Length: 333
Ligand code: ADP
Ligand code: MG
Image (cartoon, rainbow, N blue to C red; front, side, top):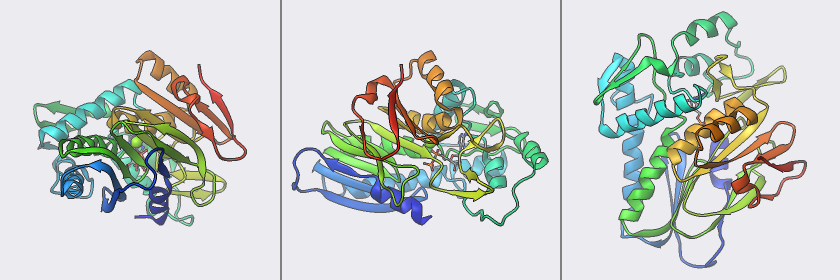
């Protein structure tokens, strides 16, 4: 767990627009490699928080690439495994997202993730050579995943990594659970992967990707949706002016260089928002917009570029209050 991730989790500011000073219950929990923060504003039986954290832990066990006994761990170790119906459903969604984004989101980049090892990389570590990248890349590609009933099989040498979609999916399942437990209004913040529950509007902040200590890029009032940001500022090393971060371009096999520094996707389906935020970060503004239009995707998107441009889709542009200096806001057609 990196300190920067924790800071981001803390500073993704959400202020309730109504009912200031009212009672709220806030609890945190470490799971899925990040600090989860759950805030319940209204309703909910005793133990709703714990039930939600238990659910996160169960998904963490099933979906983590480091738990050899979990669903993903067993698929990766044996190349084929029978897994839960839930995991199968998430894998189907992941493959669908891979198809829609023409492979920019690809849940089989595990061998490249291990090669780059961004989480533990320092400036002194030698960068992977082009030949190494090419030979590892040969073992990636979502077409190599097959699902028959509840059995998932990978082609030889491949590895499954649901890290770019799992938190969004789990946030949706937690929101369902909280509603079932009588919670009326809540915020589930999974390290910057946010789900707003209930009808109340919250003022949601997006971090300035080039700001100091989590200053805000913008705020907007939203309700009953997921807000997911993918950025290059959480885990990275910089070598000779190039930023090597944790979002990989499946085409090049290296960290994406699309000119973007953060992408925020807003929508009802958290898994979709999570997968798309990663894919759009790889694709850049123009190709992402083509995909949104081609598939009429039910999402709004905010792209922040290296050159200080904030570009937002029409359904969210008007709602944005730009907070950071040096950025200009453009509403996309
Ligand atoms: P975070 O999990 O930090 O919020 P993302 O949702 O963008 O960020 O997921 C990034 C993680 O997903 C990486 O750490 C890696 O495990 C995996 N990943 C990296 N690039 C891709 C990609 N193009 N498609 C799918 N998964 C990816
Ligand atoms: Mg993602």
